Amino acid sequence: MKKITYIILALVLSFGFKGMAQQTPAPDQNEAISITGATAHIGNGNIIENCVIVFENGVITAIGGAGTPTKGKVINASGKHIYPGIIAPVRSLGLVEVEAVRASDDQDEIGEMIPNIRSLIAYNAESKVVESMRPNGVLIGQIAPQGGTISGTSSIVQFDAWNWEDAALKVDDGIHLNWPNSFRRGRWWLGEPRGFKPNKEYTKEIDVIKGFIANSKAYGKGNSEQPNEGFKAMQGLFDGSKKLYIAADGEKEIIDAVTTAIESGVKSVVIVGGYESYKIIPFLKQHNVPVLIQHTHNTPFRDDDDYDLPYKLPKLLVDGGLLVALENSGTSNFQTRNMPFYAGQLVAQGLDKETALQLITGNTAKILGIDQNYGTLETGKSATLFISEGDALDMRTNILTHAFIDGRALSLETHQTELWKRYMEKYSRK
Image (cartoon, rainbow, N blue to C red):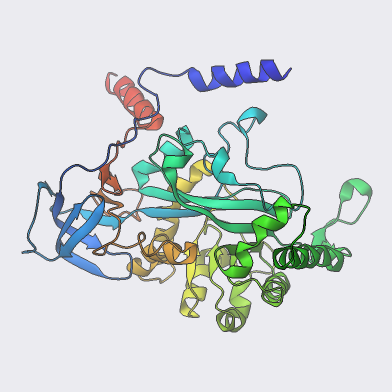
């Protein structure tokens, strides 16, 4: 039966239209490149009009206004806009290709406490879903496992590579924990009333998490002769080399999760989701906890929530002084390419456009710990950027003409652009 499944997978992935193969990764930058005339959106809230950006060997060597000396090949981008590459955190991109085909789905492994499961080694750099991110400017992602209580370990990759080794930017950057809910829906199929009711197992589930973290910490201080890969993987949480990403939405759950992590000796905590985080902004500021917020195109979780709460939540947190970025959980992987437009929607909620851009570039890089090299357009940082004909946060005008990762000029062709060309030609003949 398994043999038949693999044959079906091979057929699904191989059949297609001519010219729809994965694009060849770009070669290393071999000459200096200068981009002139565009409006540069730095990713830290600043803008440079009529900007000149020069980069060599994958690194930005100069950035400034008109008059900044150019070098090497010159790209005239007058009237266009330059942005840092957009970063997508907490996604399973490259871990699942066809959800209906189990053999192509590596996002969720068996087990509840499996921090030693490394998403990176299952990452498929040749995924057509990954490839489809680039034409919208999404160039970097944090590839995270899903499922269980402790899902495993994530890594950060760039989206133009031959394999996972080439793709990796930051290896094993964090552990991902799904915090239990203090309320759960009634199981109608067991005759329970519909709607939410207290989760009687909540305290017990937290104790299990506390126990696992405590045992992991003790394991690191001891000299056990019995190796435990799960406990080994947790050690980075106690020395600060890894962050703990906790998926939690409720006010009580967030407080319990952060308190438990801090009391257990975890150095760095990030809340993922954070639906009710606006209720406890002082608490999060006190403990220096950033929030990765679910995508804004959503309906309220509860009947008595503000109808527009998901849309205005990022602005509430930004106004409260928290370090905030957008993530895209709750949607299919392919929708990750819409991240710039989720950020653009925040402008309609009153957020400054450059601040909205930070929520998918500079702020995300800070939260993921890659801001020394990525997230903003600054001298000495990676030349990971793109040129758009218009506003990148507007789906009508975000039309890319060029994109670079570490200075390498990317192909913006994908199987989707091939299909678009195919059918545009079909309808133009009529």
